[in-house]
Image (cartoon, rainbow over all chains, first blue to last red):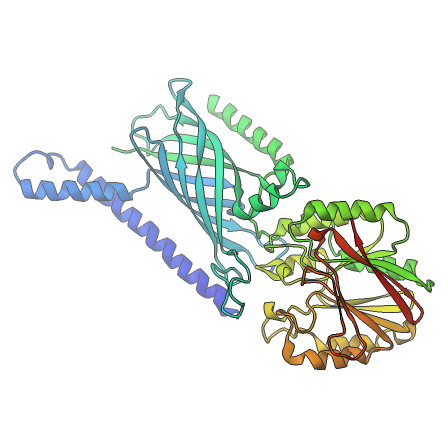
Length: 232
Length: 269
């Protein structure tokens, strides 16, 4: 019984280290091929084609941002990487690792989050500052630990509890401000501050069925900072 | 300089919003704000205030998970009456085991003018719910004496447990029979899931019945879980199990206990 959290932590660490080693490998690849002069044009055609494709693929793997977040039903603090894409960079997929202190329970918890954000509008307030009046999307959060299950264990009669304690589906709306750094060569090219109002499936179903529960009972507030990595 | 200002402004904003309670760390965070260990506190009150009473009257409610409006109305109704000595909640305060659910329910029940105690329901055991229940309300097995009647409150959610935790806990039942022997003349057993229900360890149902019948003058049993009014002599031995409807039905039971006698009433609101 005592072994299982250790096991969970170990597999989790393995997963995280694999994740970051892939990213750093990809990053090295991009740097190497990106800085070798003349690979695109000159003599060795087959070679350059290969490297270009490799570069492209690796480029996609490298996250375009790192982020930290406070609260949001995924941990007191969470950190992770994000990939921005789309013509206006209006789409973004984030992966976050969250930490929940133990508070009044026996142990602290780790959570994993996959978030899809859509940011359709952009208002340029200043040369360096832009404002996105709407960011919205969905995030899935899973809590690590034996106490939480995706599906109820076999001991229960069929569909005894018709929900998962492990997987939360959250929706959110928020806004953000982006600040673009002046430097043209710094590792990070900008910083983004965002806030989200969010709720999960279980909070929502509790909130909408009762007048007693107020908006701030079942809607949460999250704050985050996203560091945008300079892309070549 | 400009950057510094932004940072200062940011911290100020952070500090301000921290005041409001809208940051949710995690649905199962176990972050408990406010009152804790409610059962123990209220039991002390019940045992003290009603020690000399010959007649006691209590309301028995159960299964208030996700029925906040109905529970809130129940509190208003009971607070208008002045003949109820205390309230017993038969368990299932939470539906999903979320930390906030326990606190929302506690905040409603805390508006009761009379003391209340809560039992552990099967839904309260989900995820880390049992830890939260223990912190906010108290131990899953407990007892108290009101007037001359001992109330034995038992965790009977065997399906939520495994072999490592005895449910029902026979050693607790036996030990409680001996405790404070001189202070009570009759007994009532309260539980969330009654024998024969899907949660109960039905392999020991008759053993359970035998062990609680060893108590001095066992009057009857109370249970929740089945979301409907029940009045059944399950073991055909004269001990009636009274089940109270879920609070969502806007119904509850009132029991009046005198010496060697009791009456009950189903109240709708």
